[in-house]
Image (cartoon, rainbow, N blue to C red; front, top):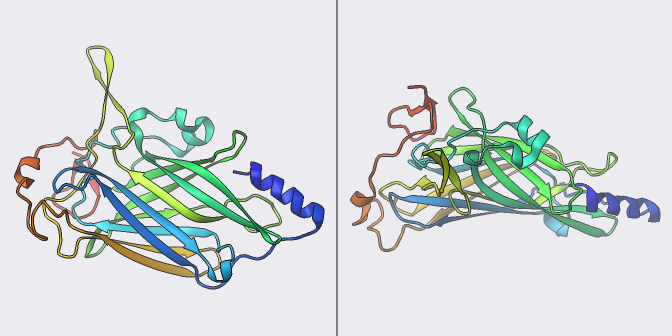
Length: 294
């Protein structure tokens, strides 16, 4: 992601402007979550977004880790997503073309900021999300980020799907590497990050009769009942300046599919058997996303 940023670095050095420091006070984070569609017992795409700001309109400190917590009984194992795996090495060497289509989990985007003198430079990047190799008994997601400019540099980082305590069921714990743009300057800062995990714009292929037949996976399964107060989500965010921030939100229960805490009138129709990820089976009834071999 260095093309536009490198140009701005050269300009700054030419005029002797130097670099203004990033914010040292606690960053402020706004968390947003959207479920589409939102039908109890059925598949959905989860979109979560974060917006990061700092006091005084400064560029915030670079994000180093985010822990996104989501509700219990989100049916990833029954979603049909992640029927194949990709590796960080494949993404780094071959890009998205190095991963099988059936490893795609979703898409996203990011917006970076760097303060150059009195100017704030922004650069957008696209993100694709892939099922990574299983780490022990935990699933791993891989994020592949690239800037919009053709000659930009790509970035690969991973996140582990882990169990989380009530009222949550699991978390996506992601550690982000520094995003360098000038060896003598602080890394670039993420000010907006959006990730969509689910079947939206995702196409898988099933081998039938010697042909690859395209299909759309169902998506993350919502539980058959909605907790009182809606589906809870929260995040904890760490920055390279040592500060942390937290944010939380909830998605209201679907208005037409039953009262909170009770299955809606169509919940029984939504129950069906779905095959787990190839080679693995769900380890009993657990709010987390651990897997075990059959």
